[in-house]
Image 1 (cartoon, helix red, strand yellow):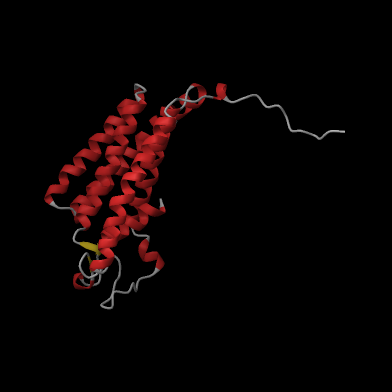
Image 2 (cartoon, helix red, strand yellow):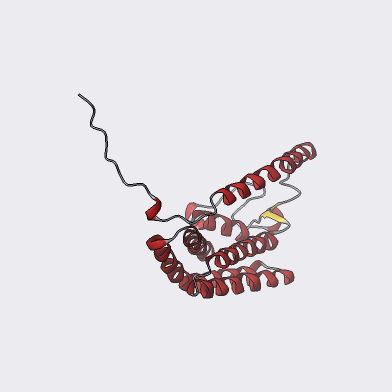
Length: 213
């Protein structure tokens, strides 16, 4: 939730002065748009997590996770829909309307899929909704890195806030080498742990050893 509040404030803008310093207070960050972003993040990621648990479990745990996902989908759709629509109307661009539609339709599809217990597709569509929202936020923010609510000329942009060319070159090479490694490792872990688990697979307790005489 805190991540959602923080990033919503970045999109909305904060009080940055001409020296590129933040001059606002703590409660300036607790504005309605940022708080809605926080609630949206909490609901959508909780839904995403519940769907994943339902996908990876069987038995009672699976049934409880499905029920939780169904309940979370009810508030997640209007809350997340309101947040992405507010983002689009206040900060978006013409092309980002497509992302609003993708995110909204994906969440509606997730709600339907939880009813018929198609957890794999539901997990895929929550992923699509999250990715569309992230692209919407970054697309709305571009070319700023952190807008100033005091004067647009004082905003941090991709030009005045960027690192040196040498640093960017090193970071690019590091990302080009490490990103495939991380993706391969993540894919391998998903494959290894692809089977569902249940409480029936947990060994019976043999008790705690009390020592020997």
